[in-house]
Length: 68
Image (cartoon, rainbow, N blue to C red; front, side, top):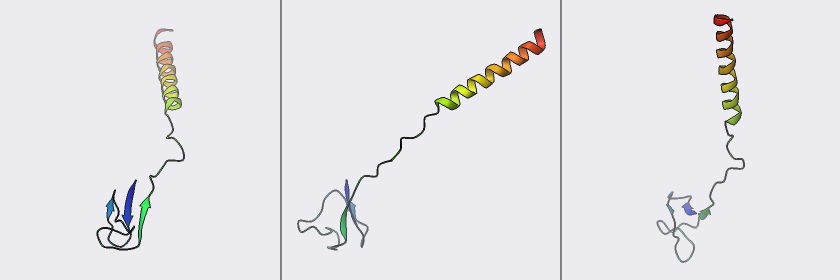
């Protein structure tokens, strides 16, 4: 977690003893919480399965047209 000053844009892990910005002394200094993703990114397993099935379908049709 990092501290962030709205006046001077200071970003750091430390703050002054009185709770103000160590760079400019501003009171507009707050703890910036870590941003968390509400959802996990989508996995691409479904896309991979569809891709493999379509390639198999294409190869089967080419084989069928040439040799059957």
